Length: 143
Length: 143
Image 1: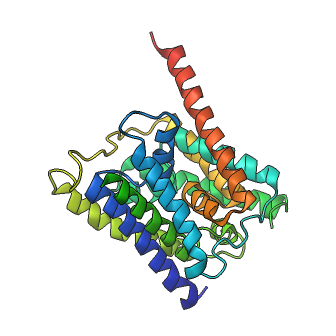
Image 2: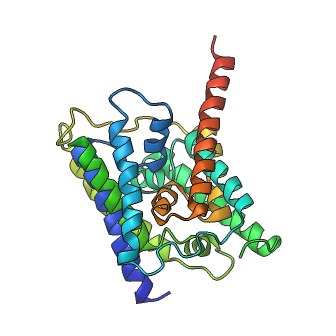
């Protein structure tokens, strides 16, 4: 890792922070992706449109990325379909159960030193690292 | 206005994710691979995002209400309960299996890659399972 990755990392993080800041200061909402999407699964009148627009923005951003970044989705299929499904199920289930994910807890909550977010973030970082350790170094199944 | 803000927030958020490398599962997995060839790049992404958002959170604390909304819709809970820890733990496992979490996954839909769609569908299913099981548990313990 060198300046060729640190600077884009800082720039990317700054954009994420600015986007989340705008949502907070302009609309009063937490930019927690799992929470925003979760609200779509149990739609309430008057509280649905903005969520759809947010997700549409994410996808649109994804479509623009190749013009800005080389190989923005490098390694998307680095794992097998079965593991992708298992991972998706766990990420979705865990995010709803834990009321947040890397954006909601990891960025928005940690920034406010919210106790729940500090605990959640430390927890998922730990189990994330543990999972990679087990799969890569003990079982040798991850690339 | 709310819709336009949400869309632009999502767009910039996605660009930040991509510029920062969060949409590249191998980079995420390398960040979680603390015992191997560790890549701390994502720490810089989160640090920058948190730093920027922390400023916004402070500013928001002095505002009576958001610019385009009547109130701030912020989380108020401060208790650390089993659902939080358990959910975060499971989320982390899923994250460590495929290197994807909600934001990057939805952004990746913009690439048209089947892997992204597979993960997102599984993630939505996992979210719905969580909501359903939470309702069931609530039904069991309610008087």
